[in-house]
Amino acid sequence: MLISKDIHQKSLSVLHEQLAAKGKSMDTLISQISKFQIAVPSWALGAGGTRFGRFSIGGEPRNLEEKLDDIALLSRITRKTDAVSLHIPWDIPRDVDALKQKAGDLGIGFDAMNSNTFQDYGQPRTYKLGSLSNSIKETREQAIQHNLQVIQLGEKLGSKGLTVWLADGTNFPGQSSFRNSLKWTIESLKEVYKNLPADWKLLLEYKPYEPNFYHTVIPDWGTSALICNELGEQAKVLVDLGHHLPNTNIEQIVATLMFKNELAGFHFNDSKYGDDDLTSGSIKPYQLFLIFCELISGAEEGSQNWDTISWMIDASHNTKDPLEDLVQALESISIAYTKALIVDRKKLTEHQLNGDTSSAQEILHDAFMTDVRPLVREARIRQGGEENPLDFLRKNNIRKGLIKERGKGSKASGL
Ligand code: PSV
Ligand code: MN
Image: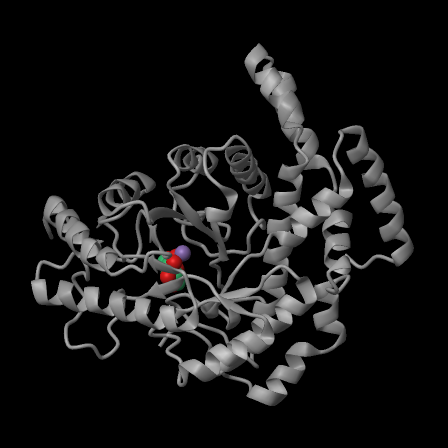
């Protein structure tokens, strides 16, 4: 929404009064909002698609360098992202040193590296029937080696994490042995883990279905946690919001993982039905807020240190300009985070302990219904970002400029 400076100041001072009444300092909140940075995945910069088609938006980055340029632009206008997450082999750098130099110049760091053993891309053995879980030892070995190469590349770039998402699973009952697939997956991951640098994290993602529709080897957070426990302390569970069956209580999963110090981080997106990869906060903003409530209270109460959690967007779709989509996602995530920051947790705990259900619910509702957008905007302005990043992109014809420079039909992600 476009608003004048005058209205921004007025709404900020109203909010200031509301927050002061709750004993919250605006400056502390602004510094918390400013500190909270969310990585952008390299594959979100081009128009996404489905298996039914892909509609180019035009001006999409044609190479890794241009992806960095787009993230630098996002960073400058939103001040909410300062890192890119690469997907290998989609993003193999032509020249690692030059890429690192460019990223450094742009102030962009390298977030977790994503290995990819869910596609065939010219490697000797096919992943059609699985990778780290494959019944053929040589295929498992190939998938292990791929992960080790991704670690090596990440080390050169300064990344500190390896994200593993396995598409492995089956489409038909009887197709494979559940127990053997799990056993081979654990054995393979142990080989990968052995080679994980001491200051790295292994982020293990789960997903109930797709591309396999009968069974997935790591379908849920429990299986992921079970594997991580076998691997060691550096392995933790990655929660991708779209990787749950409808109506799953994701905030409870977050609380449980934090309780055991087993939360690696997030892939933010939103969904109506499955892994829809829709813009964060576009479908279920209350759920996103409740997730942040658990994250903040889990950290404040000492379950898991906030700084050990990684934040990334993982969304992509067919209809919006990817830069606009990312601006909206970064804004929605910051808003949910801010709303969760202003929850009166002391009172909430009191109501919980007294069994006052209605008052406890009111505490959350009150924070969620507070319009914190002026605060998020103020944080951005104070950091030198644009007052309204979406408006900035449009007024300056950014997409048109990119189409002129890069062409109409370029492709950013995938093979
Ligand atoms: C799988 O659906 C996933 O969430 C994994 O994180 C992949 O790496 C990513 O999407 C991109 O395909
Ligand atoms: Mn994901």
